[in-house]
Image 1 (cartoon, helix red, strand yellow):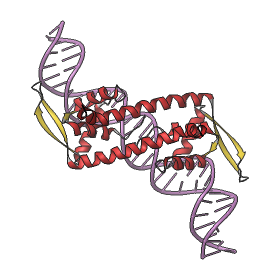
Image 2 (image 1 turned 60 degrees about the horizontal axis):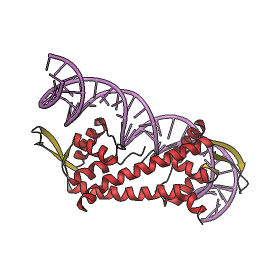
Image 3 (image 1 turned 90 degrees about the horizontal axis):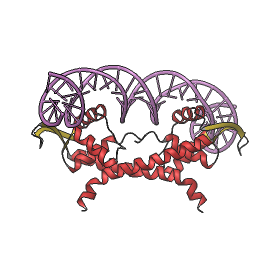
Image 4 (image 1 turned 45 degrees about the horizontal axis):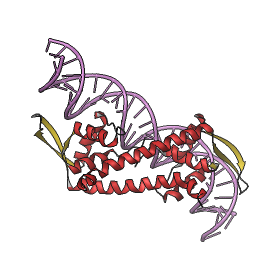
Length: 109
Length: 109
DNA sequence: CTTGACAAGTAGATAATCTACGTATATAAT
DNA sequence: ATTATATACGTAGATTATCTACTTGTCAAG
């Protein structure tokens, strides 16, 4: 359904804590109750793009399992962009609700 | 930003009353306070698609200006589809909010 | 020693929307 | 009278986001 918010969702997560790719996908599935089931073919290119834009940076580190994972961390520019996108999302969601509630509102006069 | 909801927005409007193309664009701009500024290159192909799918039907009629306009009317199938999309939208919006509010919720414990 | 979960990645396809056109009429401005 | 602007309907091609499908590799369980 709706598109163009994936970067905001991903940035929201790594704004809370550094995460690696698969962790991001899992966390999105959990929090959204399977509404977001991001594919690796969507996530990895997106992460690379966000890194190019300097919204995130990555580093390799040992996970609790002892394996090397590629972690992503948000930058100051990323936080700024995230705030912007969250404000845009609010505006968009409100606009949608105004449109679909239009008839109800009119009927409610 | 978000995509894939245009059909729901358009159907929401013509569910309230029959409308012609330009009227739909205007009404969306008004209600959304310019968040939705649909282009004709988006709307007309979409209307034709909705008509193909039998969610709307069209007829020509004289507008109050005396000019012939092509009006679109929702069908029963269209209303059914609209309800489905509105439920999906609610689910999606809630999922987004759960993801972006995650940190706040955790911090609020 | 093979199967399945985890992990990172790329290539190509699909779909939604936009930009940029084209056409036509009516009205307002100069 | 001519020009610009708004209305109205439409199409073609480009762009972008996401998905499907694939590859490679590690580790654990059976």
